[in-house]
Image (cartoon, rainbow, N blue to C red):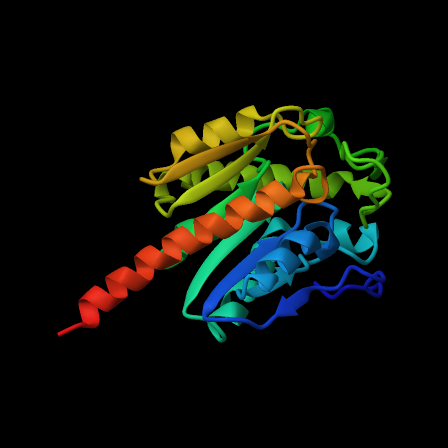
Length: 261
C-alpha cells in the first residue's frame, strides 16, 4: 500500500546504533513511534541498538490507515526485524497494545528472537471497539483523548479511526490467538491494572496460552493504556533493560561455553 499523505511531524521511525543487541519497538493502533520514543531513548542510552518502527498507514492520515490490511502491519514489523538483523547479533522485541499483538505474531515465526516485552497487548477484547465489529458504517469513528493518566502528555495519533481498520485489528488478534501456543521465547508483560481500552485480562490470557518457560508480569498501578508514555514509563524502561541484560548474559555464557576449548 502506497501512502498518499506525508508523515506527520514527530511521527518518523527512530534508529540508534549501539552494540550487537538489537531492540525492535512497535507502537500501537493509530499511534506512532513517538509513543514509544522514551523507551527507545532509554534503552539506547544503555548501549543497545534500537529501532522504533512506523507501521504502515500510521503517522500520516487516517485515510492511509483505512487502505491497510493487517498483513501490511505484519510486513512492517518484519521489515524492522530484518533491518535490525543487518546490524545486530541478537534481537529483542517490544510492543505496545497492537504492537504487542504484532510482537507475539513475529516471535512465533522467528524462533531466534531472544525475548519479547509486551505493554498492554491486545489479543481477545477491546470493549470500546466491540460495537463496530460487524458494522461498516460509519466509515470513521472519532477518537477521544489517548488513555493516559499523566497530565500534559501529548501523543501523536489520529483524531479518527477507520471502522475497516478496526476489522483488520480484530482479524490480526484472531490470527495471533491461534498462534499463541507456538510462542516459546521468554516474555515480560506489563499490565496496567486500570486500562480503559484493552482490559488487563488480555495479558492474563496471553500468559496462560503461550508455551514460554520464562514468563514474567509486572503490574502497573499508575498508568492507563498508553503506559509507554504514562507515569510508569521509567519503571517499564528499567524492567525492560534488566530483562534484556539478564537474557543477554545467559546468551553470552552459552556462547562462550560452546566456543571454548
